[in-house]
Length: 117
Length: 160
Image (cartoon, rainbow over all chains, first blue to last red; front, side, top):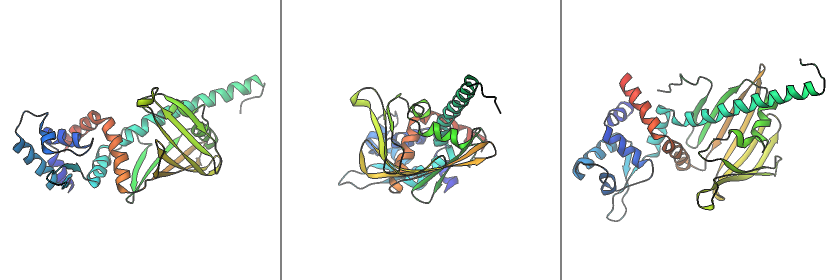
């Protein structure tokens, strides 16, 4: 499935479709709107993504909205490490706060006339 | 494919169907890390968001609670809140996190700080209500920085 997913994502239109679906499910019409290519062409791209296991079709009356599969989201996340980036940004700030606390502790020790270890 | 070259310290993994585990080391001892992670005067300095934290309350004891809010105006503000279940300073804490007061599907978060030499090894386990809730959390995280994601994907595909 991994190779298939990568192949599916090697196309910029399909990546843009995934990007749109990451914000929530959407119909083929919705998905086709920003593109200058035909709706059948979009449908073909969606089929590639669905065959690769990245998206699925939900049946809702006559509507057939597409959405990202949770497993696919999990996989994309593993590959791309995006979540890691968010966390690391946060923890680098925490590093800075820890350095500040340490400086304050040193300062307090000085004020009290206590020798540093 | 779990390439982690640019940030060797941080590990983020999925556990089972519903959990995310975050591990990282700090140069400072557990007492200091604990202080930075639990003092409401310090939390807003590092807890990342697009917006500035506008309210930060922490009643750190078993049976206590916390409240973190971001965003200035009522229409674009959001908050996380929930009960503190267990506290063993400066090594362990368990709390439940609810988004915007929605208490049906909380995330149970355990934080462990272990001394490693002169530093700290931190392990955070976030257990979501179900697989869909975890996917949603990841999706939100991904949506925030999609350009970056696709730059990385381009790089990976070029390598391959």
